[in-house]
Image (cartoon, rainbow, N blue to C red; front, top):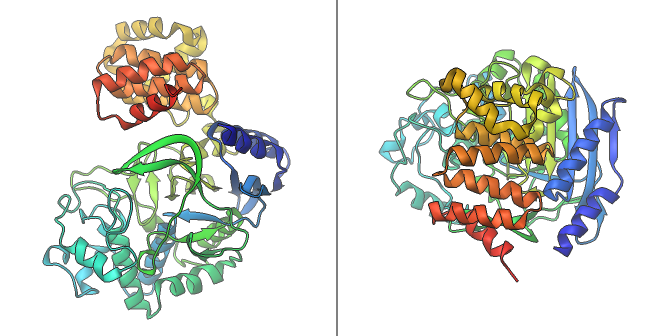
Length: 492
């Protein structure tokens, strides 16, 4: 716990490196400092593009915890699976060059495939809808490690997870295959192709491929409070170094290191016609794949669609294309709002995609949290009533709305999302009111009690957290998160 306090202190005490437009910057910096303190993030970089220019560019906190080195604009962060967005651009460059079509079966370009893989399309591989077995295991280790031949031998022997196009399931195998196709059609290694056709044209000076085994100048490092046990992520209080390696054949899925400034330059080049000539190529790259049943799916409720290396939000207003990587980095492009937001951190588990919309709200007033933007529509009537009467009246307001129209009331998941959103905005009493309401409405839900316990713990109510983690565990003995938190909270 002393180390946690040290990190928090460093985040708040070290100077901020920034280049920003006047007016908005102070509010944005205050919001980011709040996120850093709440999640114990050592270092963070942000960039905001609006109206075709960079209006915010800043670095906060500690890039190297061991030596107390402050983050600057030159600090280099791993963007992990955000690399897939670069792979998406590479594929669209080949489409524009007439070398492939998104609907092509991969057997047109690759010979050594199991028969059941041959009809899969480029688009299915890139949208995680192929059903292919995964080339990594439950603990995110490559099946054959550095041995490419062994990895392919093992994954090709595995059955499909589901019929192609049936659903979304995050999958690395498809991107390793896409890398092979890019190399065959371009005559270059995947890394060299991306360097020559994206890094150089966009003028990126701090961006490179690499991993924990490389010596990287100005590295921001990689830290975590989590560990993977048997495929399940468990969170503790000990800060540790997150060590990852990305062998060459895996680089189309992950492996780029960059700065928020460089990512901003890349996004400007991408939308300015330097990387893709046709605006229709951007539209194709950011269009979600429709599953066999006509719906879309993505990594989570926010990013509820999957496009070509870019998860996307499918919603009525302010849609976004938002690559995410390593539970630590993300950047969102809002095409209709002429806005992009980049957030890179050096802490695994931050999931900045969950608060990028809030950053966008400082630049697009209609997206500000005060409007209720980003919340499930079903919670808005209850929200309106509680803003008038106070969140302490949640049970009474619920009963009143139920008498009016029980079918219009929000479900368990929607209330849970709202509770976490309030928590992220440092509105803990309001968050607890909603999560207590949710638990009372769904007494058989282990997840409702787990969520309530998590926010009680965040609010400093240790006994309340223990009691509700215990209820959750009684309903679901396999809830590893509750088990881990109880172990920590009940330790002598």
